Length: 153
View (cartoon, one colour):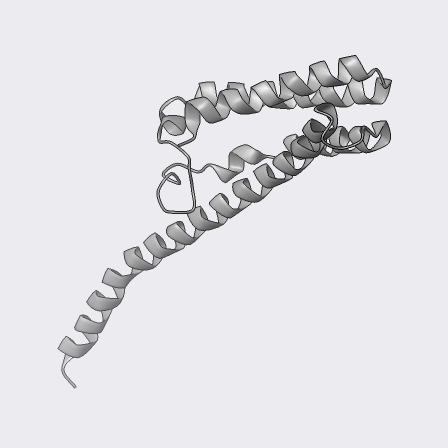
C-alpha cells in the first residue's frame, strides 16, 4: 500500500482541526451571548416590575418591591462579564458594540456601578421608605441606561 493515501489523510485531518476549533469558539460565543442576554432579561424583569409600581401603573406592594430589589441585586452579583468574551459582538443575537472590548475598563466600571446601585436599592427596599426606594430605583435604572448608551447598539 502506498504511503500517499495515509499522508493525504493526515494532512486533511490536520487541516480540519483549526476549522473544528473555530466552530467551537463560535459556539462558545453563542452560548456567552445567550448567557448575558438571559441574565439581562432577569435584570429587566425585576426593574420593570419595580418601575411599574413606582410610576403607579401597578399597585405599590412593598414586599413585592423588596423581593424584586433583592433578586435584582443577587442577579447582578453573577458574573455577567463572563458573557462577554472577546469578539462576541458579531451576529444577529447581540446588540453589543465593539467598544466594550476597546474600553473594557469603562465597561467593567459601569457594571460595577450597577452592582453597587442594585445593592443600595435592596437596602432601601428593606428599609421600607418609599421615597428612598424610588430614589434608589432611579439610580439603578440610570446605571443600566448609562451602560446601554455607551455600549449597546
